[in-house]
Image 1: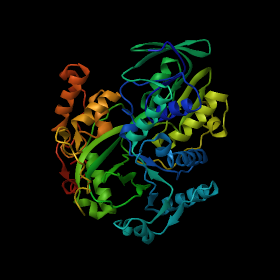
Image 2 (image 1 turned 135 degrees about the vertical axis):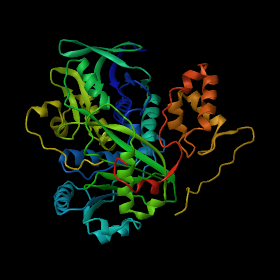
Image 3 (image 1 turned 90 degrees about the vertical axis):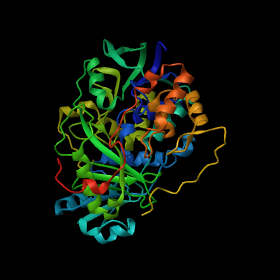
Image 4 (image 1 turned 60 degrees about the horizontal axis):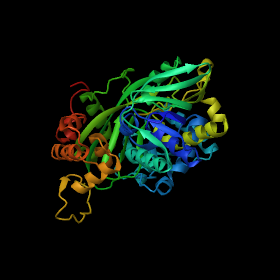
Length: 380
Length: 104
């Protein structure tokens, strides 16, 4: 293993992979990615693959819009098919309160240039013919939202990064961060030590443990989210559907499988990833209520992953107060896959030039010392 | 609804047997992926989709593990023990889960 590197990235999920590639593309050659297991083993490889821009806070909307511009051409750029489907996101509402939240969100989104719009229930089958419009009070739709295959995205970024000289050390666990003065001076791993120029904490649900090695407390908490996949069927829809009412989400993969999950209000922070019958029942009941034809399907497989959740459901990005070379890139609260390409760019701007964009400043760890405006559309 | 997406059946040479029938992955594809650096069962699964079909890897993963052990020189028990088992063990109709309460 190399004894030193300009940038050491901890975690080969979508954030670490996108950042490694983006830095290498800009000419930084001494980039090392450390991964405790294998690429995508954490939240990324377990996620639903949705790429949504319909959020309720300006930073989340802007980051997601920037990411979509990258995702739209990423297969070509990486010379690797990420199975990107730009079929739009349909967000369901069932109460007057949810409709009002949607109207306000769409107004802000339109102001920022996003082509989202409100739909009456009877307009939904025009977009998704098998959908039962009597199950909702209304919806919003953004045609430029979409989904992609998380495995393919991580692989594509890492393959391209390696071609540009990035080193991936998989099955390599970070066991300590040695702090000297105001910087992380050494990264200690199960396979050797590295002196970093900059260290990036992109460890997802384990970011809190990594930060603690450098004496930093993060407010993040790991929350299990379950998900399942069905057998493949003929193409029935390209949209991704999510519900503000129940936390249901689902889409159809390019292989034809229905992939989806549902949030559980009773889930508490923990590090367990068990699969439950409760999830199967809750998810399938809601799925079939909205799309009765899907009751004919067969469940193939279920699993779970972590949301790395912050108090305001927005990521923690950028340098750490008191430790100038320790950069946080975590706390995505379920939205990391969507915004990773753009986050990689703004973090690369910071690492390369010291540039702090307005959004980077707003998403710094320091924000938790004051009042925070939270993201309302957290689904799944 | 048509069960199973229509798939283009690829021409498979006689001297390159299929190891994963669900996803139609051959021995040479597995060997090629290992040579590219996908040298654990979990990585091969995600890269080639072996074990992601209806059989849940019961047919293919022991075969893929043998190829992996042979190609990397690692013991079979070591390469084969690491893979996650995910429920249900066999495909189950959605309708079975629609009745009852959440915990039932």
